[in-house]
Amino acid sequence: MARQENEIALKEFRAMIEQTLNGVLVVDGDTRIRYVNQAFQGMFRCADEPLMEQQAAQYIHCDCFERALAHDGRLTVTETIAEHGISFRVGIFPLEGDGLYCGIFTDVTLDEEVRRQLKEQTLKRAQEVISKEMQTAQEIARLLGETTAETKVILVKLMSLFQVERES
Image (cartoon, rainbow, N blue to C red; front, side):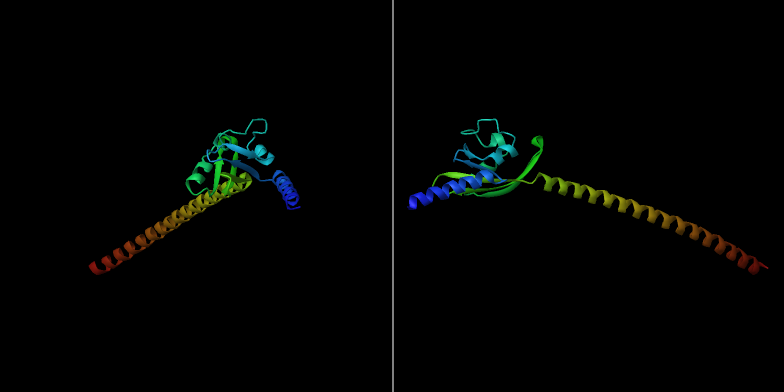
């Protein structure tokens, strides 16, 4: 009975992995692909390629599995693959007792694009503020220069008048 329950649980687990929107990739200790779900294939545009036994880095275009293996098999990282127009967050962890490592890939391309646009807007706004501040400072300097010149003219006239009075 327990074996039958385990088989049912395993089928349900596989169905869940196949239905998730996250890409799932399982590799061995040499980072060769042992399992991949459809979401991963869609995310990395490799649905028509024979993935089994291939090096993971060939499809994800980064060394995240190699880095994970160098750090006890665990790693969480966000990567951007510009040539494929994708940004993803991956959590990698070892599968107990099998010498396998699982990576759960979440497509964060839209999030990264929004973040990039927000940075651009913020920089543009900062430049606008700096320009406005410079214009204001220049206007203040111009006005100060005008009033200083007017003050100088009046003071010079006053000094001339006093000098003429002193001399007479």
